[in-house]
Amino acid sequence: MGNGYIVNIFTSSTPNPKYSFVSRMFAPGAVDGDEDHVCGTAHSVLTPHWTSKLGLTPGEEILARQVSKRGGELRIIWNKDAGVLRLSGQCMVFATGELRL
Image 1: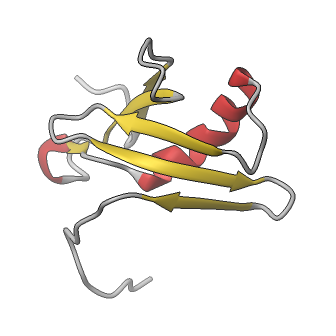
Image 2: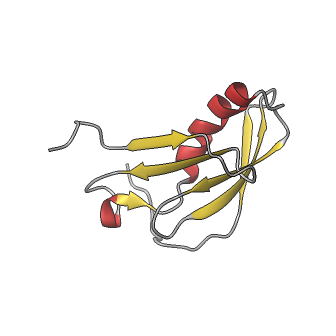
Image 3: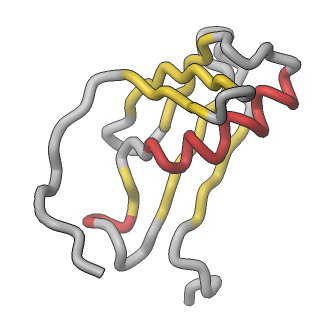
């Protein structure tokens, strides 16, 4: 039984000093296997929260880890004043196509 939400993001602090935070993102029925392995959108939402919670300076690089089965690291820089968040890390194309509204 679901909770009624399409996307569910879970996040936590971590005892691993290498990372600022860890996360998982589930979207049952919306993504293959019900879990996004490494979700840039989720980290875009989580970064302002963790920057504030951990007392990090916007513009400072943050290293986060998505702890899914495949997992992955994201390097994140949030320029709060410009309203820009930059993500970097290793990636792979899992879908291509055209968005039609």
